[in-house]
Each structure stands twice: as structure tokens, then as C-alpha cells.
Image 1 (cartoon, rainbow, N blue to C red):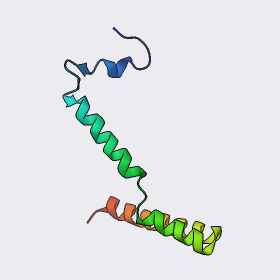
Image 2 (image 1 turned 45 degrees about the vertical axis):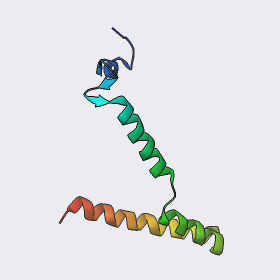
Image 3 (image 1 turned 30 degrees about the vertical axis):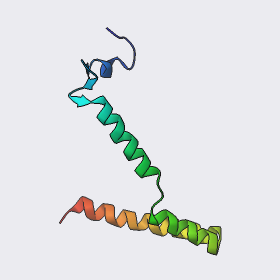
Image 4 (image 1 turned 90 degrees about the horizontal axis):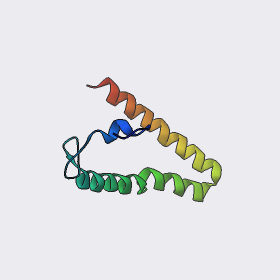
Length: 82
């Protein structure tokens, strides 16, 4: 028996590299892909950087707030549903 703060999840480990029925190699490759996708700048980031370069720091901050406001609208629409 393992003691300590991580003992609760170590009890879920199964034989042959499985965690509650999930293949650990598949989970690791999925998490690597998610990390890569999250770290890749998208069009919103490029828009903010372009505005910051061409219009200065103030324009970059305004563009960032505009992009964040758009995300809030999309999040609220998704939460409310059809």
C-alpha cells in the first residue's frame, strides 16, 4: 500500500500499464497532442500580435480585450444552448 497525498490515484493503476481501463500510452500521446495544439498560436493570437506591432502596445491590449470579449459572448451562447 502506498501512503501519501498521491496514494488515491495510484490505487487505480491496473496491470499492463492501464489506468481504469485507459491505455497509458494512448493517454500520453493524446495529452501530447493536446499540449501541442494549445501551444500553437491561432488566428486570434496573430491578430493581437499584428495589432501590437503595427499600432503599439495600446492597440495590442485593445485587440486582446476585444478577442476576450468575443470569447465571453461565445461562452455565454454555448452555455445557454439553442
